[in-house]
Amino acid sequence: MGLHQNGHLAPTQTETVNWAGAAGPRYPLWLERSIAPYTEFIDQLDPYPFDQPSDITPFLSYHQNDYLRLANHPEVVQARSAANSRQRIESFSSSVFGGESDEHRYFCALMCEALQAGAVVLTTAGWTANVGLLEAIAPPDCPVYMDADAHASLGDGIRLSAGRRVSVKHNDPANLERRVSVHGPGVVCIDALYSTDGVIPDLEWYVDICERHDCVLVLDEAHSFGMFGEKGGGLAVKRGLADRVHFRTISLSKALGGHGGAIAGAKGMIRGVCSRMRSVLFSSATSAILAAGHAKELEIVMRDPGRAESCLAMAELLRRRLNQGGIDTAGSASQIISVFFKGEDACRFYGGLRDRGILTSVFLFPAVPRGMSLVRFSVYAEITERDVHYTADAALEVMRSISPAAEVCP
Image (cartoon, rainbow, N blue to C red; front, side, top):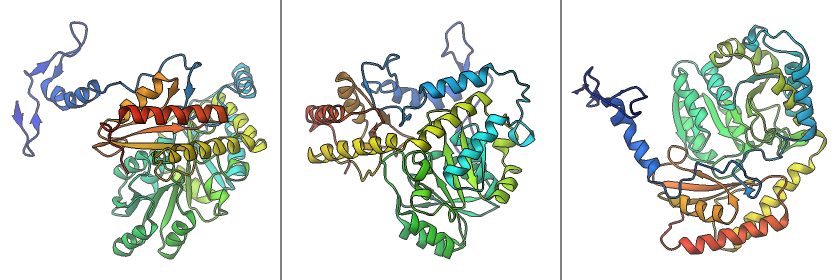
């Protein structure tokens, strides 16, 4: 085994290790050494938090992103079934090259209505939307200002673009303005609802900074679309800023309970961006069957705001109960409620909750910084007050049982 000039192990043809046994390939030693620390880290987690039960009917399932529980709504199932039964000739090509069907076009029209946007382009995932958009709009050496807690896909988009990342303190528009004053006009990336702590930014302030400093604002509405605003249009719609936010990116796997993503913006701008987005140009369009389901889900959101309102009300009750019991919920103002721990103690909190019939999500590095972990409750529309009180009582009981060994981050 040799060394590169940077000190990393360089592979040779003779040094290999067999991780897969007799039936699998032999992996080079340099790859085994690179991956082994991650495997060892995962293997030592106790309890292991990433193997949720296949049957979750006996559980309160706060680990899901289907906030409005629309994925299996009877009308949605019927819409997907009807679309699947229709004979069609699909090109299975990029949406830019004619891969869109009538179902896609109808869904895009509904999205434009809800988002109060000039145009919407569909992508295969929310990740694809962020990565493709930033690659398309960030010119060489353009500063791309990214909130420290914004979604990882925005960081991936910066890496794949010609721009350069400038980190900004989490939910701190004053820090953003100082950064822009130093580095100049560029692209600003924030979340409308941060998936790690449930915080909602002061969107008006960010819009004002971008307009005064000639910056482009990219707002990731993955967790806010369907939950806020008239017709579920998201935070920009709720705040009356839809016509002042340059680009909004959407994940369809959250409130709509489906698969795919979208980008919203002015009609002419979206047409130009699509011609530069490699994640759209070199990827097939999403399924027409999924688009039919998404359209029906959005129709339900637009006509029935009570689902989101109930979800947010139950989240507020759970937050209040946890706070009253001494559990810090990190400034959450949404259906996402997180409890932060030092080290991997979130696994113990998760395990205690699971033993009591409550499923949650655990975030570890790289989803959160090293030396930190969190348990996230994603409150959903079917939760009742009785469920919330049971959850809060269980959480307080588990926290007492694992303290003081477990350290909670302030």
